[in-house]
Image (cartoon, rainbow, N blue to C red; front, side):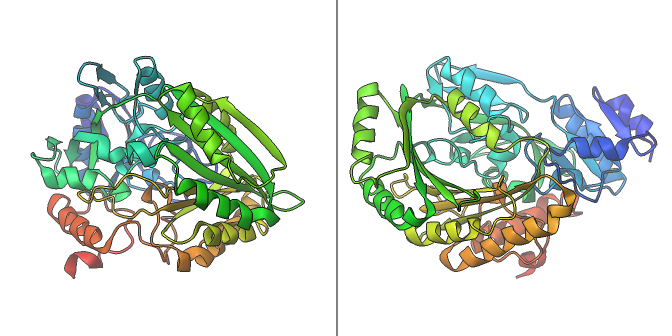
Length: 451
């Protein structure tokens, strides 16, 4: 393996097994404090798409598996478990066309940076809920972000992707050119058979008034909270994002019912919040209504997920009753080993219709995200065990999981992240575009391609 030859062809740099501290540098690429046991043998720090292509060709020539690292949360550490990690952290260019309401962004552009730039021009995009996460894996997994009930899942506002394929070719895929690659890039997540080096986005007019109200309840009021939520959300416009955050305390789980309205005017926001408040159960505390532009939302949400903690995460989609799902979540949160853990349950009853022309094919009227968060390695078995038992209890109520935050390292996953049709098609496309398995280092089941 002549890495010197690779380095001569790169604008960026490499870190090889001959250099001290490769394992530590590999671990540093993973945001999660819980690092994967398997380490890369080569890290390529790309500075441009051409670097990515050179790295992929080198990996193919040397029989390596390869994986892109965009810089996100990496709850399962997938990005660093290939032989070669291609670090995309320096690919962070962003170009806006204000008249056309479009953008071209590279994979390391973060949600917060894109949101701030768009907001300054009166534009918006369904950016993710964590500001520090780059758009790379977020968009590849579908993109369940702010105001998604009205603006849609983020991948449906992607109009083109620039991709490096397993043979090193660089292509731009759209709905009409390389349409099968474009189909897969919108929702395949880590099963995508290439590396996206740029996304082209269609932008939205910004909400002029984003306003949030939080109502806090004890666990015993879960049924009343869920009934109220179902009632008001059945009549609410799609610009309402309703989430119940459940956290454990020594006195039992606490529910925070959070309604964020993305309205055109302050008057519209006030009227919508007034309607949402009708019939609300008496709360322990009511916070707001208060102005919460997306930058403020990031300031509020980021402390819930501190860097360096140990994380295990899984998600569920459900078309069932909110009360059933929420009651099960509250029951599970009472058993959480760590008080830092949390669960989010989003009710999307009036979401706009989801197109069916992408790999992103699992979704529902209810979204649940379960986060086990703890500090010490000794706590791994208890917290991971709690998470998986909680998800097992939810399975009968659910239809699938969100690939962007699924427990992909679990060998016995019960909930799919793709529809069966999408799973079969993606396996067929992977066999075509990545026949030697350059990007397949993490895949659990190749059998679907033969069925």
